[in-house]
Length: 83
Image 1 (cartoon, rainbow, N blue to C red):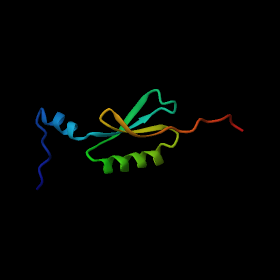
Image 2 (image 1 turned 120 degrees about the vertical axis):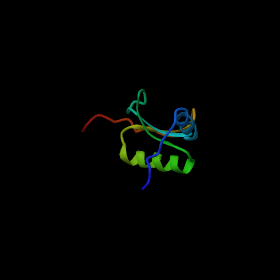
Image 3 (image 1 turned 135 degrees about the horizontal axis):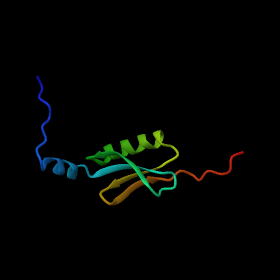
Image 4 (image 1 turned 30 degrees about the vertical axis):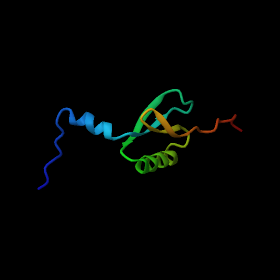
């Protein structure tokens, strides 16, 4: 039988430090962070999560960061008047 993963105090912070990529969901105006969709260890996983978020959240700003550096960002086109 497999035992559940036990995380000791202090280890959680160390594990978060290893997850250097973050995919963020912002509101359509790009003014307010709504959610962190993923924290990932490698660039390839970061980009996979980022591209998945682009397909899922088409009207929102999606940002891929490595630490404080923005690696990729998508701003939805402004919506014109309804016709």
